[in-house]
Image (tube, rainbow, N blue to C red; front, side, top):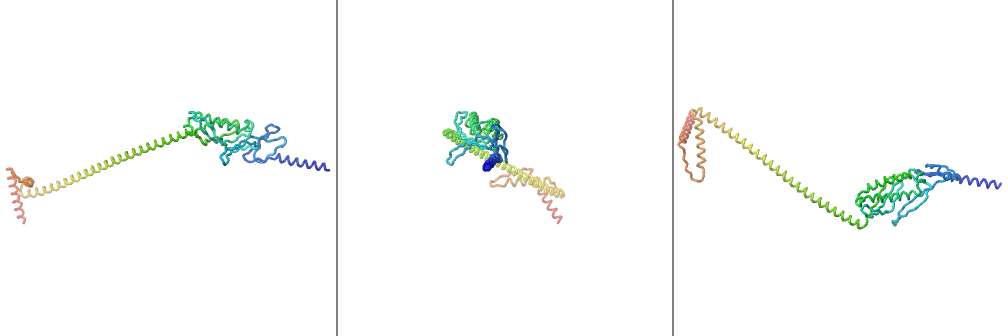
Length: 332
């Protein structure tokens, strides 16, 4: 009886252990590679999975965790995991010394973003996946930087990142890994090179400042010249318009004066004609009188000689006066 109880107790414990070992819960974005009797059997999906504890065992994978403590010291921890993380992983590589095309030793710190897409190949196609990715990144980085000068290295980070990503993605595809992107965190040339680059940059900035200042003065001079030119054009145009307006005013004035003189002459002519006189002699006499007035006007003593023909004209003017006077008396 006691032997039966012991047997049942052992059996119960065995069943409990069997169930405990055979029941596996896999979290989201994780998987496990199961081997049966040393050969690949299947991969476990997220959720509840049941295996045979004795004949089925999960295959472990080596992994690296890199961390930096509070003192700034980088600590690398190597572990063996049964669960494979399918999420994107960020790996921070330590500083690598590379040589550029112009033989400058430079330290570069890179970040690698990769993701396991095929856990079977990640386990069976490579012995140590993190080490393989790290070494591949280091060698690829040296090859890419070795094709570039220091100036190109400092100014072509995006190009370097694209080349590294393409090469690493193609090389790691057989391992079931997808390299999403590579980022260069820091490029540190030697101290003397950095000092020389700083001096070069300072000189370049000074040169640009001088060029900008010269271009500013040039632009200001151009604008000033254009302002003077436009001002002269506007002034000349104003003077032109003023002269045109003055000429038009003088022309209008002369036309009005001429029209007034013509109307006066016409009235005089009509009056003299009605009186029986000669209008031409009257007008000629008036012109003689105006001329004589201009000749005798002034401070200097002048001797004026009147032509003989003028006496006849003046006599005609006297006759016209008597005629007009007689006509006026007749009307009265």
